[in-house]
Image (cartoon, rainbow, N blue to C red; front, top):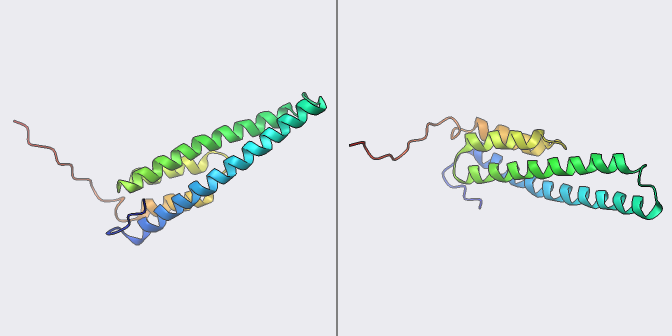
Length: 130
């Protein structure tokens, strides 16, 4: 997964930071799910359904946005694996701005975008038209 031979230092750092941010994102999503489940269970057991409804909706929305950001983080990692660092940086920026904000992913996106690989034109191997 971390095949890093022949790429610039900035691209290597960006790829590693994106991977670290995904791992931390998994832990944050698990923690948000756990807290959401605790609030839901506390509201149903104690009969405080109305008083915990707003925090439950807020945490549920943040959890859904974190999962969407997690998907964009995986897209960024897969684009970096295919040496498309421009697309990886864009996906990582989209992933980092979804709540809760992810600064590690933002720094990884910046490193992917400033690397020399992001500014190179891709040469496609298209056969000549007849």
